[in-house]
Image (cartoon, rainbow, N blue to C red; front, side, top):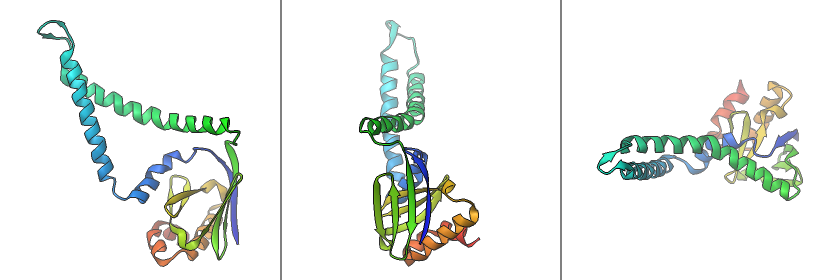
Length: 191
Protein backbone atom coordinates (compact mmCIF):
# COMPACT_ATOMS: atom_id res chain seq x y z
CA UNK A 1 0.00 0.00 0.00
CA UNK A 2 1.30 3.43 -0.99
CA UNK A 3 -0.21 6.74 0.15
CA UNK A 4 0.19 10.39 -0.68
CA UNK A 5 -1.56 13.17 1.16
CA UNK A 6 -1.78 16.94 1.24
CA UNK A 7 -4.11 19.89 1.37
CA UNK A 8 -6.11 21.00 -1.65
CA UNK A 9 -8.21 24.11 -2.28
CA UNK A 10 -11.59 23.90 -3.93
CA UNK A 11 -11.34 24.91 -7.60
CA UNK A 12 -7.55 25.07 -7.71
CA UNK A 13 -7.31 22.61 -10.60
CA UNK A 14 -9.77 24.52 -12.79
CA UNK A 15 -7.03 25.32 -15.28
CA UNK A 16 -6.35 21.62 -15.85
CA UNK A 17 -9.91 20.90 -16.92
CA UNK A 18 -9.25 21.67 -20.58
CA UNK A 19 -6.85 18.74 -20.80
CA UNK A 20 -9.27 16.54 -18.86
CA UNK A 21 -12.16 17.51 -21.12
CA UNK A 22 -10.15 16.69 -24.23
CA UNK A 23 -9.54 13.20 -22.90
CA UNK A 24 -13.16 12.77 -21.82
CA UNK A 25 -14.87 13.92 -25.01
CA UNK A 26 -12.22 13.34 -27.67
CA UNK A 27 -11.73 15.82 -30.49
CA UNK A 28 -12.69 19.39 -29.76
CA UNK A 29 -13.67 20.00 -33.41
CA UNK A 30 -17.41 20.01 -32.68
CA UNK A 31 -16.94 22.40 -29.76
CA UNK A 32 -14.66 24.64 -31.81
CA UNK A 33 -17.25 24.77 -34.59
CA UNK A 34 -19.96 25.65 -32.05
CA UNK A 35 -17.85 28.52 -30.70
CA UNK A 36 -17.15 29.71 -34.26
CA UNK A 37 -20.86 29.70 -35.13
CA UNK A 38 -21.74 31.56 -31.94
CA UNK A 39 -19.00 34.14 -32.49
CA UNK A 40 -20.15 34.59 -36.10
CA UNK A 41 -23.71 35.18 -34.93
CA UNK A 42 -22.41 37.67 -32.36
CA UNK A 43 -20.42 39.44 -35.03
CA UNK A 44 -23.47 39.63 -37.27
CA UNK A 45 -25.39 41.14 -34.37
CA UNK A 46 -22.61 43.67 -33.79
CA UNK A 47 -22.63 44.53 -37.49
CA UNK A 48 -26.39 45.06 -37.38
CA UNK A 49 -26.09 47.32 -34.33
CA UNK A 50 -23.31 49.33 -35.99
CA UNK A 51 -25.44 49.69 -39.12
CA UNK A 52 -28.38 50.93 -37.09
CA UNK A 53 -26.48 53.69 -35.27
CA UNK A 54 -26.80 56.97 -37.14
CA UNK A 55 -26.52 60.57 -35.93
CA UNK A 56 -27.57 62.12 -39.20
CA UNK A 57 -29.85 60.07 -41.43
CA UNK A 58 -27.79 58.52 -44.18
CA UNK A 59 -24.40 59.03 -42.46
CA UNK A 60 -22.83 56.21 -40.51
CA UNK A 61 -21.17 57.29 -37.28
CA UNK A 62 -19.55 53.92 -36.76
CA UNK A 63 -18.37 51.47 -39.35
CA UNK A 64 -20.40 48.27 -38.81
CA UNK A 65 -17.34 46.20 -39.63
CA UNK A 66 -15.47 47.80 -36.75
CA UNK A 67 -18.36 47.29 -34.30
CA UNK A 68 -18.55 43.63 -35.30
CA UNK A 69 -14.82 43.10 -34.72
CA UNK A 70 -14.92 44.96 -31.43
CA UNK A 71 -17.86 42.79 -30.38
CA UNK A 72 -15.91 39.63 -31.19
CA UNK A 73 -12.88 40.77 -29.23
CA UNK A 74 -14.76 42.04 -26.20
CA UNK A 75 -16.84 38.89 -25.97
CA UNK A 76 -13.88 36.53 -26.18
CA UNK A 77 -11.81 38.60 -23.76
CA UNK A 78 -14.64 38.80 -21.25
CA UNK A 79 -15.23 35.08 -21.44
CA UNK A 80 -11.58 34.09 -21.08
CA UNK A 81 -10.78 36.58 -18.30
CA UNK A 82 -13.93 36.65 -16.24
CA UNK A 83 -15.89 33.45 -16.54
CA UNK A 84 -13.37 30.97 -15.17
CA UNK A 85 -12.65 33.08 -12.10
CA UNK A 86 -16.31 33.86 -11.55
CA UNK A 87 -17.27 30.19 -11.80
CA UNK A 88 -14.67 29.20 -9.22
CA UNK A 89 -15.60 32.07 -6.90
CA UNK A 90 -19.31 31.29 -7.13
CA UNK A 91 -18.65 27.61 -6.55
CA UNK A 92 -16.65 28.45 -3.41
CA UNK A 93 -19.42 30.77 -2.18
CA UNK A 94 -21.98 28.01 -2.64
CA UNK A 95 -19.83 25.59 -0.66
CA UNK A 96 -19.32 28.12 2.15
CA UNK A 97 -23.09 28.72 2.34
CA UNK A 98 -23.46 24.99 2.94
CA UNK A 99 -20.86 25.04 5.74
CA UNK A 100 -18.40 23.00 3.69
CA UNK A 101 -14.65 23.48 4.01
CA UNK A 102 -12.85 25.17 1.15
CA UNK A 103 -9.54 23.49 1.97
CA UNK A 104 -9.32 19.90 2.99
CA UNK A 105 -6.95 17.00 3.36
CA UNK A 106 -6.80 14.70 0.40
CA UNK A 107 -5.23 11.25 0.43
CA UNK A 108 -4.68 8.79 -2.40
CA UNK A 109 -4.04 5.18 -1.47
CA UNK A 110 -2.87 2.57 -3.98
CA UNK A 111 -3.49 -1.05 -2.99
CA UNK A 112 -3.50 -4.28 -4.96
CA UNK A 113 -7.31 -4.20 -5.14
CA UNK A 114 -8.15 -0.54 -5.73
CA UNK A 115 -7.40 3.15 -5.75
CA UNK A 116 -8.87 5.09 -2.84
CA UNK A 117 -9.38 8.85 -2.68
CA UNK A 118 -10.21 10.42 0.67
CA UNK A 119 -11.05 14.06 0.15
CA UNK A 120 -12.33 15.89 3.19
CA UNK A 121 -15.30 13.94 4.50
CA UNK A 122 -15.73 11.95 1.28
CA UNK A 123 -14.16 8.57 0.57
CA UNK A 124 -14.19 7.05 -2.90
CA UNK A 125 -12.95 3.61 -3.87
CA UNK A 126 -12.35 2.52 -7.45
CA UNK A 127 -11.48 -0.94 -8.65
CA UNK A 128 -8.48 -0.75 -10.96
CA UNK A 129 -10.67 -1.80 -13.90
CA UNK A 130 -12.49 1.55 -13.53
CA UNK A 131 -9.27 3.57 -13.90
CA UNK A 132 -9.01 4.19 -17.62
CA UNK A 133 -5.96 6.47 -17.74
CA UNK A 134 -3.31 8.29 -15.72
CA UNK A 135 -1.80 11.48 -17.09
CA UNK A 136 -0.23 14.74 -15.97
CA UNK A 137 -1.31 18.23 -16.87
CA UNK A 138 0.05 21.35 -15.26
CA UNK A 139 1.01 20.30 -11.72
CA UNK A 140 -1.54 17.52 -11.32
CA UNK A 141 -1.56 13.80 -11.89
CA UNK A 142 -5.04 12.90 -13.04
CA UNK A 143 -6.60 9.50 -12.68
CA UNK A 144 -9.59 9.12 -15.01
CA UNK A 145 -11.95 6.91 -13.04
CA UNK A 146 -14.92 5.99 -15.20
CA UNK A 147 -14.15 9.27 -17.00
CA UNK A 148 -14.27 11.28 -13.75
CA UNK A 149 -11.01 13.12 -12.97
CA UNK A 150 -9.33 12.53 -9.61
CA UNK A 151 -6.62 15.19 -9.11
CA UNK A 152 -3.37 14.36 -7.30
CA UNK A 153 -1.20 17.49 -7.01
CA UNK A 154 2.52 16.97 -7.57
CA UNK A 155 3.21 18.95 -4.40
CA UNK A 156 1.88 15.99 -2.38
CA UNK A 157 5.14 14.17 -3.12
CA UNK A 158 8.24 14.79 -1.03
CA UNK A 159 10.48 14.56 -4.11
CA UNK A 160 10.68 13.26 -7.70
CA UNK A 161 11.76 9.80 -6.55
CA UNK A 162 8.64 9.39 -4.42
CA UNK A 163 6.50 10.74 -7.27
CA UNK A 164 7.99 8.26 -9.75
CA UNK A 165 7.54 5.36 -7.32
CA UNK A 166 3.88 6.25 -6.74
CA UNK A 167 3.14 6.62 -10.47
CA UNK A 168 5.04 3.40 -11.29
CA UNK A 169 3.04 1.53 -8.65
CA UNK A 170 -0.29 2.93 -9.85
CA UNK A 171 0.55 2.06 -13.47
CA UNK A 172 1.32 -1.52 -12.50
CA UNK A 173 -2.34 -1.99 -11.55
CA UNK A 174 -3.86 -0.55 -14.72
CA UNK A 175 -5.18 -2.72 -17.52
CA UNK A 176 -3.05 -3.03 -20.67
CA UNK A 177 -5.34 -0.62 -22.54
CA UNK A 178 -5.28 1.93 -19.71
CA UNK A 179 -1.47 1.69 -19.54
CA UNK A 180 -1.30 2.24 -23.31
CA UNK A 181 -3.34 5.44 -22.88
CA UNK A 182 -0.99 6.46 -20.05
CA UNK A 183 2.20 6.57 -22.14
CA UNK A 184 3.39 9.91 -20.71
CA UNK A 185 3.00 8.64 -17.14
CA UNK A 186 4.89 5.46 -18.04
CA UNK A 187 7.70 7.51 -19.60
CA UNK A 188 7.92 9.67 -16.47
CA UNK A 189 7.98 6.66 -14.15
CA UNK A 190 10.65 4.84 -16.15
CA UNK A 191 13.20 7.70 -16.26
